[in-house]
Amino acid sequence: QEQLEESGGGLVQAGGSLTLSCAASGRTFSLYEMGWRRQAPGKQREFVASISWSDGRSIYADSVKGRFTISRDKAKNTVYLQMNSLKPEDTAVYYCAAAPTSTWSYDYWGQGTQVTVSS
Image (cartoon, rainbow, N blue to C red):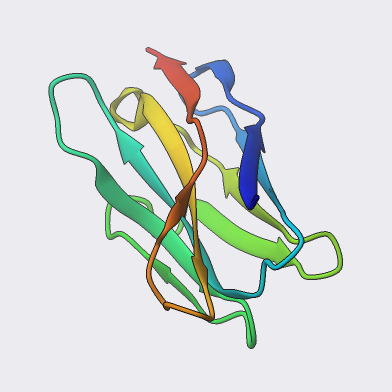
């Protein structure tokens, strides 16, 4: 059974930093891409960043570009989201997602981790 396990959320002051981690496990997990989404209270889930598992190319939402960095460790099947210069509007539940090579679709999701940025 493929699973995604997230960690690293918490409470931080505006201007601070946090790093989220997401480890993918499963006997047959062959990854095409991994990414992060977030959902703030009363809002729809939105794209944050994604990374190609094969070549590491990354894409960011305009709202986080220049502040967040997505990276991966292929040996550990883990994706990271380094978040700097955090703003109160970054407060949300952050979800890790994985797209396997079998479907190229985000079929797997983590349970979510809360990030709260205080002003």
